[in-house]
Length: 114
Length: 112
Image (cartoon, rainbow over all chains, first blue to last red; front, side, top):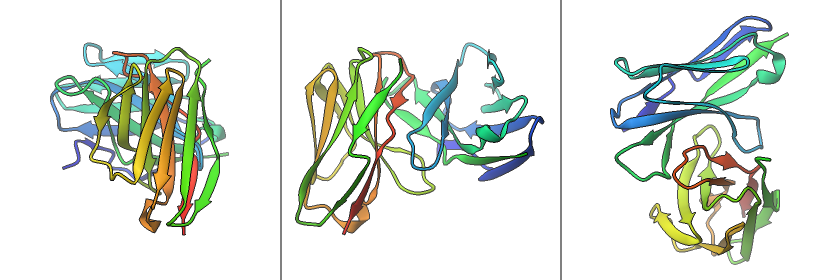
């Protein structure tokens, strides 16, 4: 059973526009969420995170929104740049489980076209 | 500095070989992780070390043997692997009780 779902395998956006990547989860015990970016043949790079006590966290061009009632989070990238083209993984931590275990979604491939 | 380094970058081995993957971090993190990632899949957790002790083994076959010689180093010893073990092996580290894990670039392993 997939507890973290990224239902869009891919997304294509024009440079300068907003990219919105979505993530849904089913486990109500998740209390901390992270977004990672991954280029081919490289390790994931941490982008931004949010605790369940917040509904928004912003860092430069990246903003993560959390809607706990809908069990939904989204990553907004504004403005999108060609260098943002990568696979984006949503990950979550279960407050009832191990502090160390993250559950990852399957990822969304973002392509930003010049 | 949030750098985790891994060597080698690429590794090709036969099913009878013994090899090791190495991971190093100098961020003072006391939790270190091994993940396996197949193409177009998310990373799968294999092992977690905290304070140099194995705290999580996600039912990984014994042909994978982790070792944490000190707080900065993490090894993964490989023996008698199968072709289906071919994957990108990622190392990560984090501060204890902090959930942000920082990943290395990975070792691309091919088992022939």
